[in-house]
Length: 352
Ligand code: GDP
Ligand code: MN
Image (cartoon, rainbow, N blue to C red; front, side, top):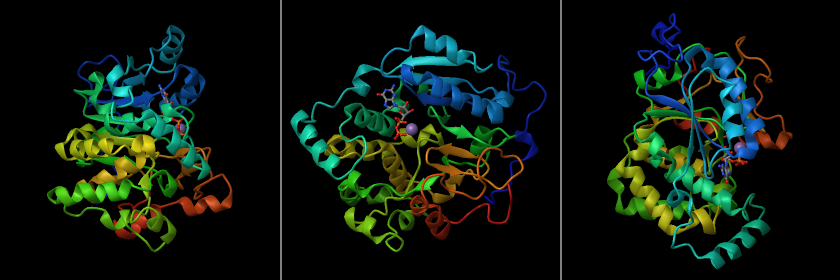
């Protein structure tokens, strides 16, 4: 794959993408958002951006998921911001519940230690539940069992660039598993035993390692040696999963299922604060061919405080070439240079 811009096939053709067209060119895919009733306004702002730059041309359905039922007010308001179908679902209780093998006292003690070390959200049990659900349970939601691709969207994010092709078709036609925009370092204090647990899993499952995997990106020690040191080998580089476009088959694979089950039993979603971003990224880096992971350079995106802002006339509202609008030291959180160094950059010779 050369990373050529998508062929005309993917571009809008007539009314093929009308919301109610049963024979549309849409493939089996959905925009997906885990969200709370209280976040309605912030979600509307994300929707407005994505509808304006992309989805009004393609009308992919939206799927909203919540651990408690959505209110009527939420459903009515949200549907006003798209012509596409909106689906609203609640998470089955057993998917959100803290697993039986997690010890409540140990969770509280661990949270105190994490908090002292400055780990964000350590004390919020719901945040741990959310990370676990996003890691290994979202794709088991009944509403997604027959779905092939999803594009994850959070409240309060921004999309800056007009994108004129069907990105889901692009994923399918180019045999991509996963697409990202931002690639970041993580807080090593949030995951001290994630890499050791991963190594234990690999010792028994070495056959699962993909040819052309991204191990070098996962284990770079040169740029921020203290990270790899604190984690016993993991650079902490990860795809920032508040944006992800992916093929659900990867998460449904026996390899990922076995890996998630191993991590879940180890307890680090609660005794540490393993995020779904490093968990997804490590799994992709080990079990998938790195050529199936795509940097969507052309999708201008921001989740505070970082962004992907292409230097293109199609983009408005972000500062081109900049990675953060926060303090300058935040620039060192950018892990894309490592990805390009070890894996390469499909876009090196093309502009979006
Ligand atoms: P951050 O991006 O790591 O600061 O975390 P967020 O607060 O943005 O949460 C990540 C995503 O999970 C967002 O889409 C939230 O709406 C969602 N989320 C987090 N906690 C909960 C929760 O307890 N219930 C529901 N329904 N959604 C949640
Ligand atoms: Mn967020």
